[in-house]
Length: 537
Image (cartoon, rainbow, N blue to C red; front, side, top):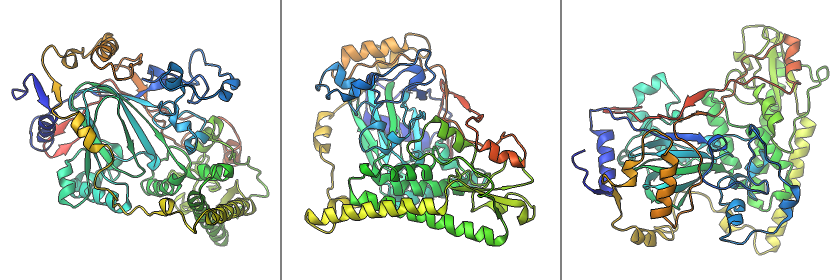
């Protein structure tokens, strides 16, 4: 405390932060309003009037979008209408052209519905990569800068960070094997550098976006009170990353945010949106992978004695036009009891249980009953699945022929493999940005609005907006009608527990349209980072 003067450079604050994390034996509590639902408490961006964002289904007065507005021309840059409809508006970007999250029509907090973040000095977002290895975009609305650290999203570099994590927290990971997924642990980038894991730093100022790529680990902290907003998106090249995330989650029995298999087949159902041979080929390869495994395991289980009741039990067909609320609810009912994977194509059940279903990989973990007591239920037949694959394969061939006609067998810019090596030593604009923010200092004087914002109370937002108008006129006006001190809903954790019915009732349950899902709420008003020497919680 005594080292802080009227102002502090970012370098001083960064050194102080890591000193507290790595050296200090004292405990520090930092207030952080993170993962605040923008539907319930408000977004910093205006809402689209053309239905480009996900509407709040729980609103007291649901908005009605006129379908005719979607036919209007794009609004002029700089107008209020532009900021409502621009796809740089974080409410809209998940549904922008070529973002496959646009197929998801149900709101998922933090995925296609933005989360707000109200930071304070040293409030921390710990090392993590995004759910389902999605892209993310973060906008800094107001306040003190954020310091980010990032590791490239290659398999080698991600594995390197995980190895450093395991090396320093091996004892803790014996009790919590998926500790890294809890987003509660921060360690210095110095440890990554020592282990020869590439790590990069950036400083995010108000009015700036930060984009993270699939599988890329990132973390950081705030240098003072601030307000940010973040959401996910996914381009067509994400499909292979999503497959990797799905496999990773199954190894930890962690439910995915949505079904990778469903989204893959939904993409295949919208082939007209595939404009690149490279991404269409990725889709074709993923289809082949899942179909080959599905057919191999079906045949193996039948040979072992598992009964196929497909001809006797007619299950509803999988919807592959979009992922809506009904589809999401239905998927919640068919999570594998062992790995929590959504059984999209088929599942195995046993006469001994009224609720358990299993994916084809883990049916032997279900129970100790004789194998003849188990039976397989199928949503997608082999004929249907292979017809989808052949259609995508044919379309990929057409795109490849077109590509060759336009000037070559491959598009080098598209087919370039991610080897973790940059063609440039510095990203464009880095030097200019460094000059613009040279000698920047965080005002920590008693008169600074950053230090006089009330820790509690209803004036929080007003101070944010007034200061933004007075001191940061170049930053888009913060339009958040939230208070950081309120309960917010966390992402719904999926579970198959509680499915009612007898053995025959499993098929009845899987044919229904409603399911009870337990929602685990968490108090967002005082999310804290507790820093203890040798242990970061």
